[in-house]
Length: 256
Image (tube, rainbow, N blue to C red):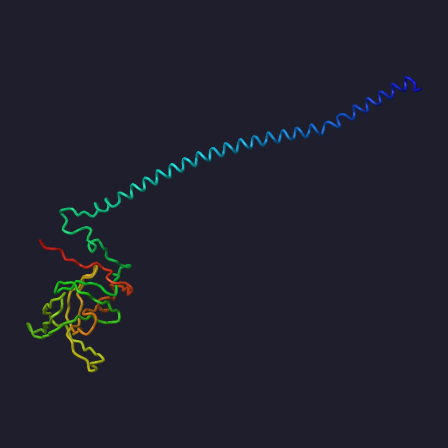
């Protein structure tokens, strides 16, 4: 039989052993529960933040949509009012002699640098006979030429003059001009050349107003009855051969 002292010593040893083992078994479980609770708390905070951000985004989107709808309504109202505004802007004051909405009146003279820009074809004002004629702008022609018929040369005050007819619209107009000089023009059908008079006429095109020398000739067999050559173009105009009728037609002021 063991002694009483031995039993006491065995009991003490067993108590110590049980006391040392109990904390080692419960500590990992408690730590794991604490970690899970912390994760749950953190997720709840993140969820609340996400919900708040979503509500703020929805509120901002609603405001933006309302603003866009208001702007669209405003633009629609302005567009509906445009026809009336355009019509009002084209109403001519009673005291104006010309219509402000006249297409030719509102066109501007097109220039490049200090030179006039002209197309391959232009309508020019020529004086005399103070009428608009269609002209072909020809950079290959050294001089300008005008179709004329029934040429009659005569003398006036010791100077050589010529009487001739030109076509204006459907009518023939008779002009008399002093002969500046003569030129000889050679053609394939006329190898010996023909002597032609040169006269001066005033030309208005765009903002140009100058006197141009014209060779008088029968151009009825050609496509254009009036040619503006380099004697008109040099140093004053540039030709855009891809365009026609760039410049507005000159309209003299009506005398009261």
